[in-house]
Length: 409
Image (tube, rainbow, N blue to C red; front, side, top):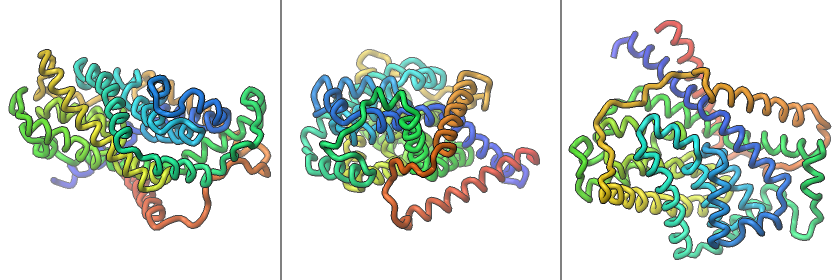
């Protein structure tokens, strides 16, 4: 690799990272606004009535709320945490999380553009199967004590009102400036919790997308590029390796679709690609955010449940499609090359939601600073927090350098 070629790739990597984030920005903002509003306006009693213990109606409601929510993994985590803390059942909360990253409409549009209609059908049918398998696994593993400790941890850490405390009516809160000031404070708290993970995740995604050759992904998956009838061993290996590859190439439920098209172009099985797409909730930044919310035991339990459910789902989808002769043919041209920063719906959505963020910033920083509001647990930052902080700073330096390289490459 000569000097000129490196600087060109460096520029490409930085622009790729920024474009991935730009495409997901409005979803981040929407998800955190929803999360903040839920935490401020929705009472625990009301949430218990709609998304209480695991039952058909509660799980269905969690799935529906996820369907109409954000497709961004980090924003979905924040909203899920808000629902769970307010009294929603564990399974309905996880159903919401899975639906909000797999069943949303805009994700289907992107999959159709990059991969084709079979993957759109696979995404929505697979998302439903994922929720069903998750429910079955949780039911048989019975993590009642873990759930109880996680809920108590959230309430103690984030200072929620105790049971029996008089809570103002949500309608009155929505009509008051004080209520929206609380939403604004919570909104910036959520960003403060995950900005390091987001920065590092998207930066690494751009680096891998540009510097790692496609042949490497093809090497990871047994039987890739060898026709549409891989052996069961190859299908199983692909379904297991999909989440492993996603772990090291984290972008998010929206941003990993271009990389999935690279796998498709290299002949990776349908099961492997679907497992890769479904794996945005089993990567380290997501695991770490869940650990901050619920503790490491619960976070690792959730990862185990999701991993088992998505592997089974991916295999079931592969052979279900094969049964009806609907398996897509891979090995064609990659659709990963798309125009960056286009004047399209993403551009206008980002402008709109950035304007909303400006209003929330005015409410947060322009109001009465003496009002306390809600606070996350304080204390000294851990070693991992400090490491991630400096990695985030290095990421910003890398991105700035890549933008400068754009003018010289």
